[in-house]
Length: 521
Image (cartoon, rainbow, N blue to C red; front, side):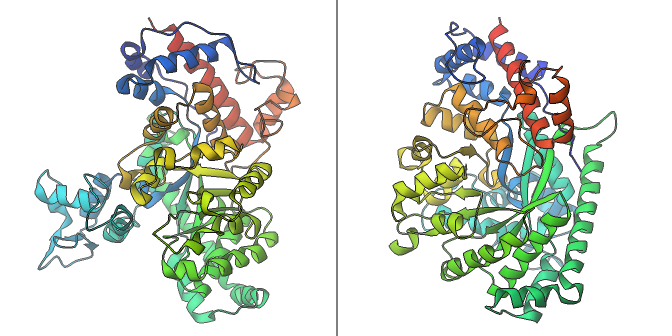
């Protein structure tokens, strides 16, 4: 697995590409009074202010900036549509020329060979538009409906080659100076659905768990999921040529898996998927968390929301090594009844024990939203913020987005992509959007990147003493953070903790980036 704990420093090529765009430089300013600030950081803040309204220079700057990890990423929606078309053609699939749904053969009637979508032309363009948000304009079909419909259309093409797909995603991340990925997969999907159908649902959660565990049924699915991931990672490492002199950049990205649970499914299947995901996270460090996916506004999702939160309330204490990150509050007025906007985030945190929240768009509609925001801040519950996804699906952006409100209340946040292949964006696009829309400073953006590692579910102690101010632990004081020669005690921590190692190397990458952009002539 790609577990190298390294963050590639800003490459000479990337810096050179920025040179013409970043000059002239802003004059150096005094360092801000915060932990880890330096005169160079203050100067880079000034530089950013000078290029904020210049799209090309801002993009070059933020593309080269270290940006931590992506904590909210669905693998099937993260890969480019072009790769999905190529995989469909490689596997001999068909694409219906009316519905644009990928299917197995034979390719007859309106079902054309996917091979015909490889060359440029009207069919290829139509497939790309149907499988992504490319050129989409809301009309009879909303952004919400078009977005979620893409998964059913390209679904047949998206499950056979997870290693190849992961290779494209990690290469893209490495090129933008990210070092950590948590991506969502559905482990043992067919097997767990069959087991849930056989066992059925029992509102007595302890009894239901025992039925699923009986005769090694869940353990068999755990073993199968681990074997599936072994196969996927072998494909990934082969594609990336990891461990060879020709290793591709993605090999340097640390990868972890969240087990996604289909919230719109039957209650028996949801419980079984949650149990499987928690068992996986307890037995295999590559699996770190469970997460509920599918639209939160589907009627079955709404009807069973509180039941699913209670499932996690029961299960989570039984699996202390496992983590929980939940899609919650991906709703707006008009999409659901007003009462459905009043409790989803609160229950995800207080009932289900979620450590992170994905989206959280409807927070101002929750009962006593100010108190909820204070609770999120006190509990250090991070909100994963995919700005473009929220704009495309919910039409929430700019001042209407709660991102500034979360920051005002001190709720930790991190930018994320969600489904960058479907959205036709990358993480740099999200940083550019945040910097321009909310006038974020370089220090602000830097802390968002730090959050994406600090709140990641990779194992080990943190480099930071606490989650306020990013002050290093005592073992790593005394020398510049991110230096190549940490103290012996700090080196021991970095060797023992994948999390601290990622954070330390990102700090070194920040120093390299800041020096580079300020030295461009």
